[in-house]
Figure 1 (spheres, rainbow, N blue to C red):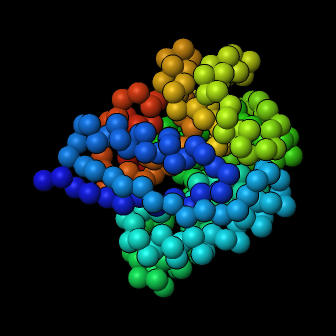
Figure 2: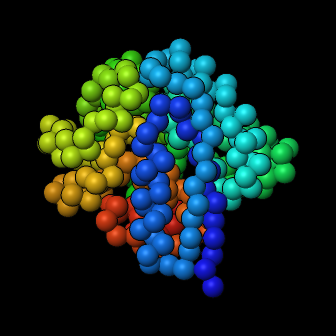
Length: 253
């Protein structure tokens, strides 16, 4: 019997990536297992990746949770990492609790998660205590992301940021450029590489190629989000071509 799941995302209005990369991973899973996924989104207004716009956007999250609750999705996740990490250490837990409360109040028992929390979970599943990462953000926002990750007990050894404030421009960046960018990243002593810490910066086509070249686990926030969704839906099993995380059993770090 085919199992069917509804996947919900709370997406910045200018994000053009998470509604393609998450379905790409889960469509690949459909070819391997008797499962089918449908995808549903609610959007929050945001154009520029600045602290001011991110804080304003965050205020719309509860409305979005209510809308996804109406669709009776099985899992819902925010689809913006920096908006949460810029708010200070551990903030993804606060957001997850608030969104879950709003979902429950509207008759939904969906599992609720955030892409920010998913990255931390994914790195811990990889047993990654030291990482290097690539980000499109301005340096001040990148510094906040690094501080947040390190506050979760994961050391960031090296960072390259591209200082792109226009979110649409971030989404237009060719993901295969990351294979050249990562050559400049110091990965010595790293346990894993985050090829794109940003859910808007495309990376999916480059994940496996980068992992094969570097010889260590390579992931992205989008891959971690997909993995977090599958775990919450109780779905196990390897999906080849998306890095080590999609082949890693659910074992605590």
